[in-house]
Image 1: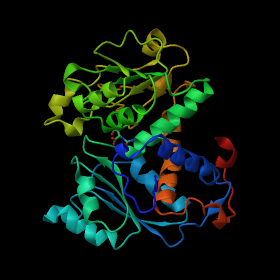
Image 2: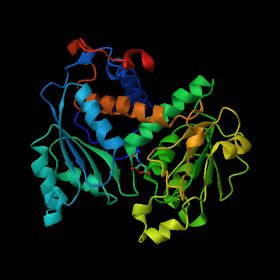
Image 3: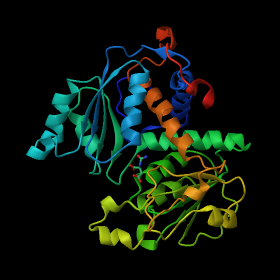
Image 4: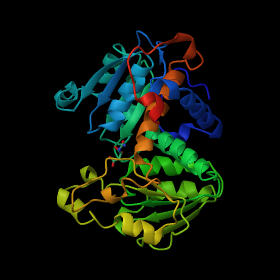
Length: 338
Ligand code: NCD
């Protein structure tokens, strides 16, 4: 795939070769994220970081990734503080903001909104999550994490068993991740959710067509050979009322006791974050924080590498990153820590 100038809107754009290209580029970003060296390859470039829905990790890691490549970040957060609140169309917003930026990352609560925005943009647009639809950069960082974690245990993605648990209906991360995993061979999916929050048929059809084995259940038991357990938050913002979400909160929890009882000792624990740590939800308990298989913070760290790779590729500088290297002048503990 030629990434230069392209939008990143959906995981449907990718095949195994393009994923490999992104991952190989992400690997080369490690020394910059670890502050072993800097690059000025995007010196003078501007990222328009538009987040019309709550975000911590995705928004800040897009910004950090761009800064680590030497570029500048201009941020707009919240619908109320933008002209969208005055009735401006996504098309007009895109026409204007794209002339202020070289690339745009965008999150918006409506499915399909980022693709609609991209039609008005003159610069590449990267989808940071559009409603319950897709979250392609999260799926790439999840897949990158899965690949690394499984390699550590001597396994491949092909043939693995993944359990996805929680809100599979509204959770865009599991939609995008499942579609990406469908490209691999012979994967076993165990999809654990309340019936009302089951994985959408459109995603199941993709898995079915690719010949993967899918078990749909509302029971946690029966997954003791899972390689990955991917927990999700009840997406309360997608329900009509908070009370509607309340009835599902806390239904499928993962804590040390449940993990030890239902999973094998090296099952990798993932969650896109944020985890809902309120007592009534607490889908991923703090008592697993020190567990070596808890990969949630490695996922978040990998997000910077993947987003750096996507910026370098879409702006056509992936092969020039090292040419613009310079030194880090300050002390940084990160150089040796991960
Ligand atoms: C996810 C999202 O926004 O879809 N968070 C993220 O980007 N890491 C998951 C969530 O909010 O539950």
